[in-house]
Image 1 (spheres, helix red, strand yellow):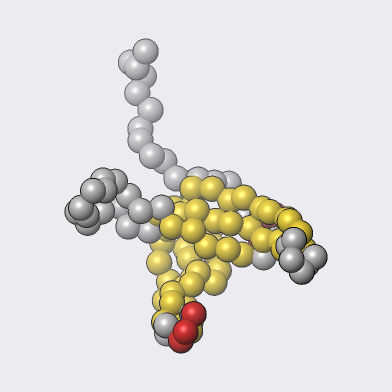
Image 2 (cartoon, one colour; image 1 turned 90 degrees about the vertical axis):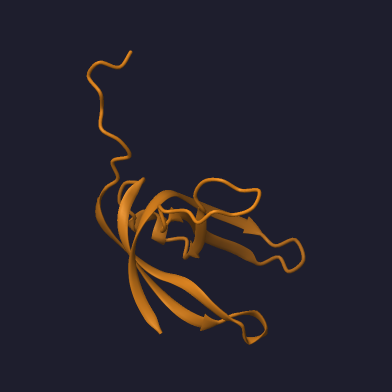
Length: 107
């Protein structure tokens, strides 16, 4: 199953490190985003859920400005122990994110 949803990408961070056990170089880009701006009430928690997804290292260079609105592709895949997991597979820049209007009278 595949679907597309608009998300606000808040940040992108690339990483490159060496796995101490295997010596293998681990690289990627971590994307942090918000999909649902209408949080559901939860016990002992207030506010929005910030989600994250990992992409290849080179994705960092292809991203536009952040924060921004992106059209994100998602796919349902088999995760650990065969459990269904939704993963973000692609991002397409749509427009800048404008959190609030600027006020001329603010000091």
